Amino acid sequence: MIGVAEWHPMVVHFPLALDITGALTLSAARFKAAGRHGAALAMVGTWNICLGAIGALVAVGTGLAAVASVDLDPAARIAMGLHVKWAVFATIGLLLIAAWRSAGNDADSRPSRLFLGILWAVTVTLVVTGYRGGQNVYRYGIGVAPRTASSDLPASK
Image (cartoon, rainbow, N blue to C red; front, side, top):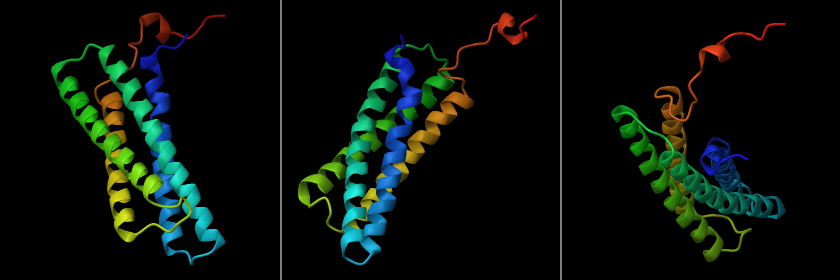
């Protein structure tokens, strides 16, 4: 069975995809003429933002479990700390924006320009968080199992 820490690389893609899609569809709903299509875009955007916020909570949970399961050198520890700080900040922002959108308005209403500005700012923080996570893997090798000499050799027939 896969441990909770090993779910993090799979889970992190959902809040990113859902939030970016939600921001795009809500932006399209804002600039689309009011009517059936604008309402549908707003509904899809609202659901994406709310599901993305839930996904971000799961990503933070699995990420904290992953951090607890690895031993890091000082440079990697600093990089991981920055990633965790960005992740917590982005998740709180996404939860607040999802609460604002779902509690304050009808799901199919057009978003305000203020809401869209804040949503895009939160989206940027989430993208920066993902970038920092990628740097942790590719620059510092965090979460990557070391290769053994036997795994480097091709299987003989």
